[in-house]
Length: 247
Image 1 (tube, helix red, strand yellow):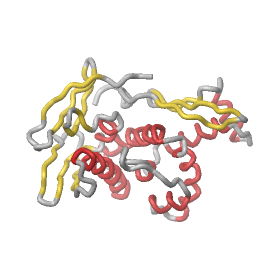
Image 2 (spheres, one colour):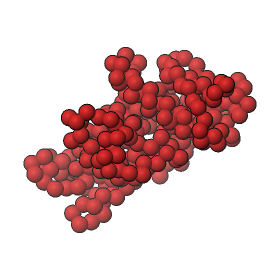
Image 3 (cartoon, rainbow, N blue to C red):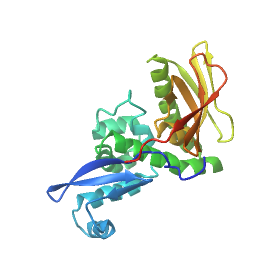
C-alpha cells in the first residue's frame, strides 16, 4: 500500500457535551480534531492541571487508545455486528482483561459512545499503528489479538456476503507480500488475508463490489484497484472503483 494509510477513508463527525454546549469533534486524514477550540493543546494541559474541558478529555483518550490493540477486540466488526452495550461489565466480558487493566475501560467506553462511525475510525487508526510492528515480529499474545481482530471482521464480511449468518470461516493471517485467497471447504470458507486488509479494505468500506468479495485494495490514479472473487470462488479478478467522496 502506498500513500498515507488513511487515504480514501471518509471523514466523520460527532458531538461532545462541553461547557454546556454541543461541540464537534471530527476525524479526518488520520487525526481527531476538536473543531470548536482554537487551542486544544492548551486545553489538554489545563485538564491535566485540574481543568474540565470535555473535548480536551476526549482528545486525550483518543491519544491513549490510538495504539490500544484491545480497541480491535471490543469495537464492531461490521454493520451486522453492532456494539449494543457499552457498560463496564460488557467491556470486561469482551476484553477478558486482568483486573489491573479495568481502570482503562471507562475511558474507552466514552470513546465508543461517540458512535459507530467514530468507532470504526478508531479501529482503523489502531490497525494502522500495528501494521508495521507486525511485519517486524510481535509477541504471541499480541499476534493472537491481531489475528482475532482480522478473523472477526473477515468472518462478519463473509457471512454478510454469502448471506449465511452461521458460516464457518477458517482464517490464516498471511504476510503483506503473500497473495490473499478464498476457497470453499466442506465445512465452510477458508480465507487467507494479511492483517493490512483491515485498513485497506474493511476501513474503506470496500468489502464487496458488484457482488464480489474484495481480497485486496491498491490505490490507482482515480480510485482503487481491487482484487476480488465472485460467488463461484473462481480465480481473483481485478475491479476498478472510484474514491469515496470526501466531506
